[in-house]
Length: 212
Image 1 (spheres, helix red, strand yellow):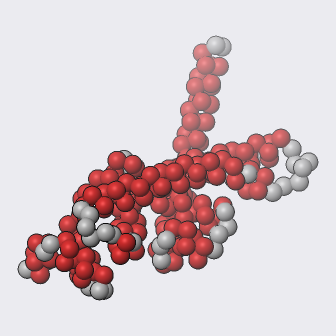
Image 2 (tube, helix red, strand yellow):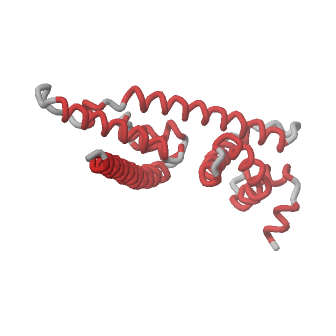
Image 3 (cartoon, helix red, strand yellow):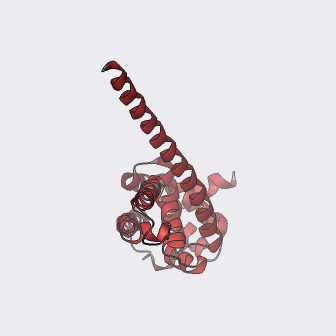
């Protein structure tokens, strides 16, 4: 019943109570506008789980900037505008991350060896770098961003939290989830490559036998 009352309450009253620290008022705002923000996020990422993560980030930033809202304006219009701008920033950050992946993941750094190790070892390092790039691209953007900042750019948890404007606990959780998913994707890519190699060998053997 309380939730119904909050949902029916004018947005002006909810904002006022939210700014006074009423958590239930904020939860009512989120319930009332979740679908609209989610739809904006979904248009940018195209995947349900990624859109949910992005919508949560958007609401967190909206909460922090709620006091800047001009009460004379339409709240929904302001909310959608802020959501769209944040999603555009997010899209640009993902694009920059992809550029960073290509620039910063150096095969030499992944597996340092002496310069006289030979061509085979150099090719192995290149394969590893390629696999890592491919696996990173399969991660949801929220997880990829956290892993990239921590494990590639070597930023501290605090620095990452400040950049993403998230609590450190959320950052650590995303990094842990991202590392697990990255390991899973690396195994998948390697298994896939091994199957392709085995298939090529089988076809080559069949061709050799048929030519005898």
